[in-house]
Amino acid sequence: MKSKTRGRFCVLFKSGEIGKGGHIRNIVDAERQDTEPSPVYYKIMMVTIHAAVGISASLLFCKKVDAGPSKMKTYITTLLLNVALHGFFDFLPHSHLIPSILDIIIALLIPALFIPFVKEKYLILILICYLGSILPDVIDLGVFRVLGFGAFRIFPWHLIEVDSFLNSIYTNQFINVLFDVLAVLACFVLILSKRKDAQLMLCA
Image (cartoon, one colour):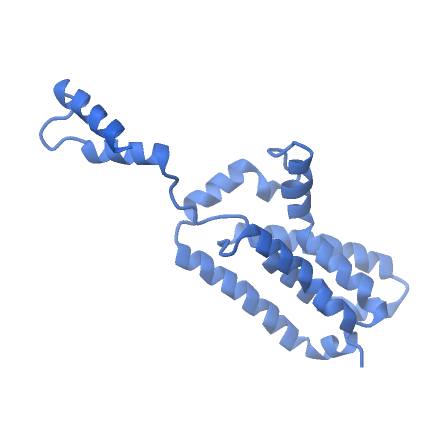
């Protein structure tokens, strides 16, 4: 890259395009951008956080499952709510601090850690909340890529134009990580505030 930049500089200097106090910094920066990717602070939100939000959100609906007759309506509502929550959190600042494969493994382990301790009648609720929380990523960033439709998106917050816009405004890594931490803390606050419901859902 250095030889390429030096050669371009010499040509421009001899041609008079770079004068006193010229624009060599811009030229070097342009060359660097061609060969060195700039840091990307806005990335796809960690699926682990989405999964944690989904599992936590199940506490909001456990009593409705106990109601009985409207279970199917409750399941549909929880699925749609968790898909909407996924979109909401994707619009917030966030980072991706761990490798994607590790992120996926942890996200898959989250329900496995809870299911053995959950009463049978709440298992469907937990799984639906979990599925809704990760469904947009599974479809847009998983299934479509495997099928060769990598640029195709169903969920609007995954559109390339939206990603580009968010990438242009969420450039502060500290703020992005802070929002990740706040999302995790929100899950803990919800669990603590609904601890009686959590105890109700767990096996004795």
